[in-house]
Image (cartoon, rainbow, N blue to C red):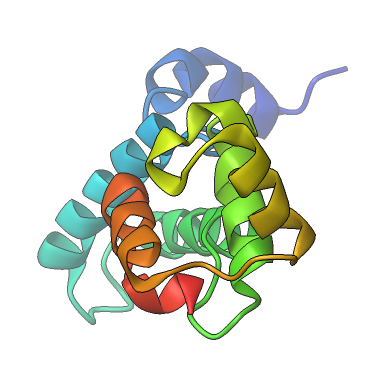
Length: 134
């Protein structure tokens, strides 16, 4: 037997599922962030606002995505590069801006450090601070 609360949720879920998603891709993440920004502008710090709990839920989803997919500055630059490569389904050959495939493999293996110009290119390509790769 389905509870009345679940019945109500089933009826409205098609509309809610357009807003309340767990982001798995960069596009979904950006969509959730845009909604969260709009909620922050609307709700502000009013904890009694009817949408305050939705703002909290979306904030948690954004935080989880960022923790999993966006390395923090100061973390290992090679690990950061590996995360970005995995998230974007890139192979060493897909990063010609770093050099040939052997050079990229040497960077990933720690046999060669990233140069300043490579750091700048990676930061621009992935839309992050260069500090992520330092």
